[in-house]
Length: 313
Ligand SMILES: Cc1cc2nc3c(=O)[nH]c(=O)nc-3n(C[C@H](O)[C@H](O)[C@H](O)COP(=O)(O)OP(=O)(O)OC[C@H]3O[C@@H](n4cnc5c(N)ncnc54)[C@H](O)[C@@H]3O)c2cc1C
Image: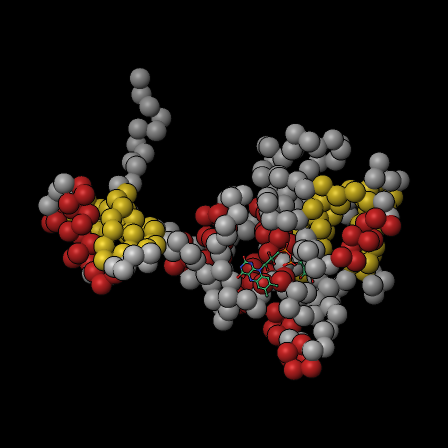
């Protein structure tokens, strides 16, 4: 019977271990790969590094490498990663996202992928301006309430080294997240390193590039805009009010406020708003089994720490 996938060719992946001093030597790599495949070195036309980790537990430091191998021919070129999001149409449904940390940024990108228009409201400043507000903490021990290490574009880790690994066993679409970061300027090494990190010099730029992707696809991002309360209409979420008196209206509100903004929880409690963590991934499967409300579910970066605010029914 013809197989619809018969044209699909699985890549040849080979794991090898080399001593540190040989690990960057192409000839040593080819020799080890050829031995593993039981073929001649001349047959190894191309090697593409897929995984790199250093084992320094013993006296002799070893490097574990995984290669995609072109046996007898070159590998197909890889497409370059660029930010590419569909522009939100003029009648796209608004989704309000409170917070411009990683959860808020990824929620916004996902909204665009699903044809929704994200509106990010962030109490802190953009990453360039925010940098100058770290001085008072370091020099005088004075914290600027809405612009500091925790609050502002990129969220709590913007000025950290941006390490991307965790001991948590909870796993989301890790590869997609890394590719999104690379598309916005993170080094390609993060796709292969066992303990990837972006680097404190680059991280703010990556964050700003993500914001530009959101804006250029029709999303909106407001800084210095602190959400103070929720607008509830007939016991349903209708939007948010900010400290400067503005109102942003939408029945869909994602809270991506991180763990440092306790005031938002006091407000939720005062207004009897309940929250729910959605794990929405696509239009077709956009309802969690636990979902009981009748409004269409909204997307957010699954497992990213964002919550959906729903008026208590
Ligand atoms: C110094 C430091 C270094 C770190 N280093 C790393 C690291 O290397 N690797 C790593 O994986 N993790 C690191 N983390 C942890 C990481 O930063 C957090 O896990 C991550 O930022 C959480 O993302 P989030 O989007 O859920 O929340 P946050 O990043 O906290 O973002 C929440 C955003 O919401 C905004 N906000 C809050 N309330 C309101 C409101 N009422 N109105 C409008 N906006 C609001 C805040 O200003 C903030 O920008 C570090 C954290 C810190 C503090």
